[in-house]
Image (cartoon, rainbow, N blue to C red; front, side):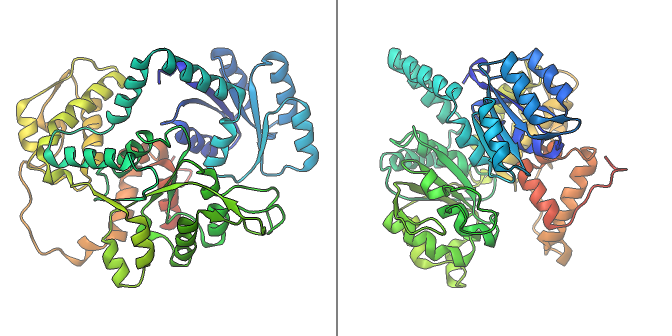
Length: 463
């Protein structure tokens, strides 16, 4: 989608980490976001840009969010406003709605909740109607959209072409669950999206869930939803992932890490396509497909009794394995050329040329981080190059594979190495967490979880 066609969202909240994380969530979507942590900055951005939607916190330093809402709706009556707060009560909700707010969300909320709220706004619905009308008017646009989806998957090797063919076959069977395996960074989620957007479910939601990131106390509520008052903090009825994904696709990332006590419930819901919200007795029928991924040997997990065999059979109707990049070196050149096209435009460095020896050396490199590592490597090379020519020194790889040696104990301590890597990346990026996450090839939310897990803290003196 062209940048000018995207819905423009302004996030006005005094918590910088919150605005950064929410903006990061919008980064790869059909929304263009702007961040403001003060009312003055928010007003400045409103003057500079035509904002379609304002996400507004009720409590702001030196200002009342409801007063801001009243002023905004007076000056920009067509702008949609979603109110958020960690301290809201029913009186605040009623006042916000009377002043013209479209919706109200209580913190903390899932990013999928804000996405669902946005998709109910008039601005979003108008955009979808306009897009549908254009597709019906000119079928060429529909083909262009399909090519845009497929463009996320680059390669010429027989292995990757076979993967793409399998993905299209899976798309033709929209009720079949799919298991995608492969090392980290091979593009498993890209394949899942190709399957979804090439299938008859493409007009409905694709919800991505990290199977290991949900806390035990919220497992049932997140997947099955809950009824108002069913537990402390359940202030409203809420849909779970199964209900949200009705007629769409539920993408379960790293399925092998799913807590064992949730697996039986997932199995039953997958088999029956009927769920019950926590604290409720009404049966809800929902039609969803599950696409799951893992970079682990899931059969080994089954043997160790860490994963249910019956659930594996249910999820593994169709199996797609994505080979590591080192197993298909002929894909390196088209991938690099694609990333150069993307980043040379993004970084305003046109006409980038690559020396021939670069591809010869890259083909000998193991790429433990696979396609994601190559992408980050190419972006960094373009950032640091002094002219429009890229040589092997810009890519920082060894010219040959390291000899196999018996690793030392500390070299195979994944936890210790991950901590060291995160600390080093933070230091190199001057403790900017968004830049650090980009350098590591992970989402900003994932970096925050890892820092919390390993108790990695940033002192104010370091920032």
